[in-house]
Length: 128
Image (cartoon, rainbow, N blue to C red; front, side):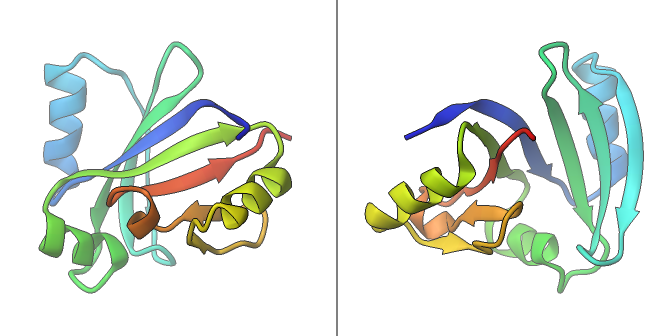
């Protein structure tokens, strides 16, 4: 497998401002930016890390969004791990050969289904 390392983490929260206060005020991270995506149904806050990665905090815009449903069923917590890979196409082929269920096999957005990753959505990321 060609996993190189963790690119970023996505943490789901009920309330974005409370999430920001935790990661900025209690943990000492610097807030880089906030954004809202109607398409994804989320509000997000990005905290860059010194190693080049980042932590993304997401809150649902509505209870019926993907993040809203995840909070309803599993609560707040780790939502996605984004893994950097050397060769996305090769990694997808290897994972499929190993029986791993994938979501959105269209580059550049390929995900390992949570049912194949102990309940965590895993995003596969290749630097270009």
